Amino acid sequence: MIGIRVDDELFLRIQEERHAEELFRVTDANREHLRHWMPWVDGTTSADDTRGYLRTVGQKFAEGRQYGFTVLAREEPVGSIDVRIADDADEVEIGYWLTEDAQGRGLMTRATGALVRFAFEDLGKQRVVILCAVDNERSQAIPRRLGFTLEGTLRLRETTPGREPRDQLVFGLLRSEWTGRA
Image 1 (spheres, rainbow, N blue to C red):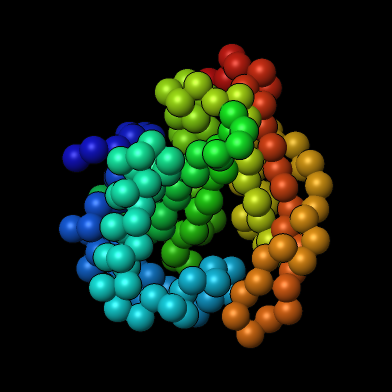
Image 2 (image 1 turned 90 degrees about the horizontal axis):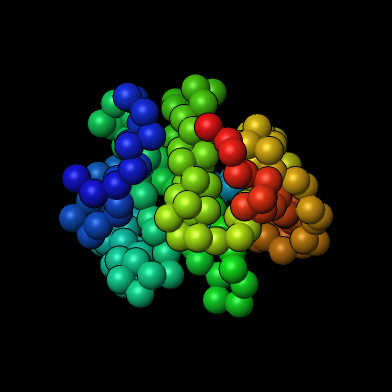
C-alpha cells in the first residue's frame, strides 16, 4: 500500500479510483456531519461522483500538484486529507475532513503533522497554509496545536450551500518555524 505511516494506529493511504466505493460509503454515512463544513458533499450522491473526484486527484498527483490521502485508523477509513501545491508560491495548502465518530482522538492533528513534515522535508516547500471556517473551532484547533500562526481573515471567501458566504481564517507555518521538531 502506498502512503505515509503516521504511527501504529494511523496510515495515510494515497487515494486511487479503486477506493471510490469505500470513500463514498464513509462520506454518505457522515453526510449530515460534513454538510455544514464541506460545500461539495451535496453534489456527491454516488460512488461515481467520488470516482470522478479521485480521477481528478489522480491526474493532479501525476502532475505533482496534489497529494490526496484517505485517513485510515486501524485500517478503517475515517476521513480525507490532501496537500495542494500552489502554482504561484513555494507553499502548499492542507485540507482535511474527519468522520464524526473519529473526532476527539487526535487523529487529524497527527495526520496533519505528518503532512506538514512531508511538505517541508520531502517536497522542500517553505510554507504550509491551512484555511478554516471562522466558526469551525475543531478545525482551527489543529493548526493551533501544530504551532501555526493565525495570519488573518479572508472575508466572505467560503460559501456553503444554503448559507451566506462566511469568513475563513488563514493559518501559516514556515519551514524555519518547523525545523527541529520531533
